[in-house]
Image 1 (cartoon, rainbow, N blue to C red):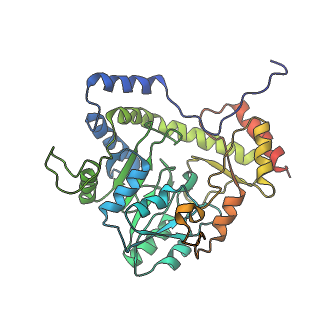
Image 2: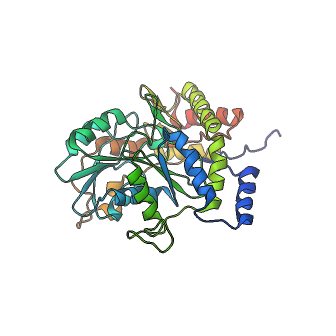
Image 3: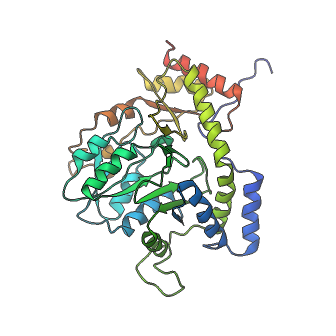
Amino acid sequence: MTGQHPAFIPPARPIIGEAEIEAAVRVLRSGKVVQGPEVAAFEQEFGELVADRHCVAVNSGTSALQLTLLALGVGPGDEVIVPSFSFAASANAVRLVGAAPIFVDIESGSFCLDPEAVAAAVTPRTVAIVPVHLYGHPAAMDRIMAVAQRHDLAVVEDAAQAHGASLNGTPVGAFGTAGCFSFYPTKNMHSLEGGMISTADAGLARTLRLLRNQGMEQRYANEIVGANMRMTDVAAAIGRVQLTQLAEWTEQRRANAKYLDSNITGMITPPVADAARHVYHQYTVRVRGDRDAAQTRLQELGIGNAVYYPTPIHRLKPYLDEDGQPGPWELPETERAAAEVISLPVHPTLSADDLDRIVEAANLAGGAR
């Protein structure tokens, strides 16, 4: 209608359709609601996304990281290399097992770990690397794996935002010792809440299954000390439905990103590394100038947006030193990204009109060249 204010376009729009609802109801009616046949089927089906690795379902992406580090024996006295430009869970999992996160810088293009910075940070106490496939762009796993192999380090991929991303044809979650995925509602696919661990190591997979379920495979036959980090069958049933739609949704995200790349001129659009398949969990641009003003203008024009992440992990309160300072870290690309990035809507439910509005608003907010 002429003169009607256009609808607000949210930065993310979780999809919960009738198929997901029917799957949840079916499981509830079955009475088998925790760690049952739906979980087993979800693990089997998700394996196809990660080069047929063993998959272990858990209750969140954070649990996936924490349990993997526990299963690998990472603990007090150990150092684990992580990016500071990520969600706090990437480092929290390291702290939760008693190890020390060692923050290193990112590459300016991919927003992922800089392999040269990783190599420079290795010490005799380093036991693992946690590369984050941020925003859906794969980290430089070929070069990171080379560093890991030289120093005999475990590699735990944080693929929480990167379902279906790949590098040189190898899917994320199939490079390292293990890969950890999240199924939070805003991710590229979800199970309301949940996580998945992928690994080629059958022994590690069994240890993970023990750890997620109080240390037992058989009821009351506890083998190790474990936790309760199981996935429910309701969550798994929803995840299975979502998994069948992931490929289509991913292609729509990629098509939306291509359109934005071709038409946004007022902001710096995200580059993609050679041989990388970006799945655009977030479409993250850089703003040169007043980011707060750009965000305000986008909001005024009805375009949802967000900053992931305004405060690098090493500057968050839990990671400050006893004097309240961020420590000795020199992370110029991390600091620059935290000051410049804005994520724009890219989700698969965007219409052609939505995309045009996003382009127009981004160019106005960023000052089109």
